[in-house]
Length: 514
Image (tube, rainbow, N blue to C red; front, side, top):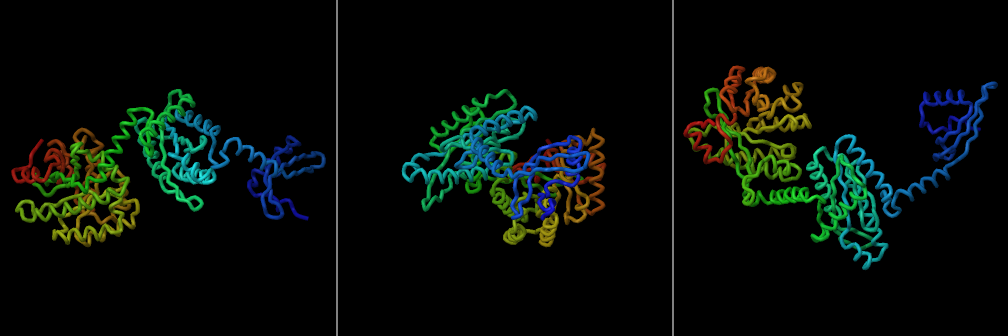
């Protein structure tokens, strides 16, 4: 007593149905599978054998419920390709995913990594608490590992307490792939070392990880597993709860990276940071201020490049603490300059990271630092990049307006290299546009760079903003910028970044040229 339309699953469009009917008319007979809705509401798999009678124009169909058969097929597939305890891919499916990764690498000239993960001292948990507790711990470990995987990655259970991860699309350079694989490995080490709560027991278990990076060359899958396995046993020999790379040079690179990261954690407490100052000058080369640039002077490594440690700090909360130290140190320096007849009117610019700017207490932090050191807020300049501001434009504008109420200056750093949205630029309460050095470098010989700089300077003038060019290294560049209306400069032509003692001596004795 029901119309067939009430049983359809509505999983296909009307055009697809029409095309199917037309095909059936041509072939006159067809058998296919579909899904229909049972009258009790559940979905069922159905096999339909349909015939078309041209003479009468009728369709005759025989329908059979094949849900049990499909469920059995699914169960067979799961048994064949998935581990019944953890529901992760098993070794057989892992081999297929590894083959796919190798093929992907060859097609797109990319690198991947194989991580062999073994739980430390798992046998003792089985022996003391029983296999049922051990199985539950393995299930929890599997869930934690899945949470560490990106879309496109594979985590499989190889057997016992061993897991294997395939990390795909790790870039074109093996060093880059090693860095990403190492980062993923350390995340896994941390996740698996957290306490397990199993049936009233609190279990602790760390892990050892071996990593083999592979790219576009011919790779035998068995060899890759063997390489990662060898590296894993090296991690075991080192005491566990660590990772090792199959290739020694990659391991050395990762060890150096980790050591630097650990040293960075204590650098602030050990007072290893200092500010270097690079002079900013006006039309007649007269000093008008400086930019304060952070430097890390490590006792063992000497001066560490900001290009090395700033990205590290930005991936953690360290950048916020470091940014606060820079702000305090800058205000302290402005306070000291108040006693100097030449430097008392200098502005001091500092860079503000995205994480620091997004902190809810950032504006009060700036206000408190200025009040505590009793400095003129107009002499403090905060440099913000376009990407930081446009990430959340409304929130950014609110924070900037609050900073403007305090009295600090705001500079838009690296202008022209980010989004450069003129739609938003007119709404940003900034005081200065900083012309990126990439436009200054070839301004003497590049017509397009000349045009871009001329446009930026004109834009700044029309918006009543100050324009300053960074990266000025030659007199020809300075003169070209002057001709286009830019009258504020920063670069090696006027002075390199230097410690405060050298900076003050150079300013008092005349701006050095190099």
